[in-house]
Image (cartoon, rainbow, N blue to C red):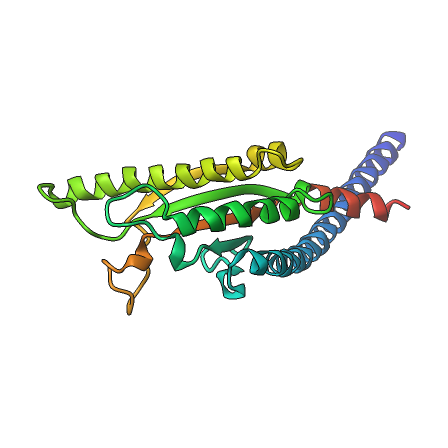
Length: 229
């Protein structure tokens, strides 16, 4: 009889332990969902705050408020589209003089916002994207032209980053901004849609893409820790 009792007790204890683990799993999942929803709401608010801060600072540098928007392709990113005055001449990697002036005026303002105590730890990357129109250089095949445009757009983005570093030479935000920023070329791969013509000067643009971090580990840990108090 004692053996049966022991077996029964063991079975009951095992079932109770299983129920406890299942309950803990449910609690953890609920906390995770709450933390995730909270993060999404916080992320949206931070994006809007970032847009407002950038618009306010960049208007004085010659950028229209409409040039700072949420990225339609990335819900966690904000884009700054530099104005037509920054556009490159056909086949050229050099910025126009007005473009140099705007980058020199805008970069310190951008860096001061992104490198502030409240935002620096939330910024994942700052990518300078160079773009070209769909023009194929004379004597090249369509595929050769695509490759040439890719290389050209890369050089354009690097020149913008270089000018940005010149503008930040005496700024306390220089090192911070340098750790965040990178350059990439898109060539003709992301052309502006119709009604903008594929050869339109507006295709030769530069976009600053600012992406916020998306990890939720800290939020989940905080939610779990808070539930223990």
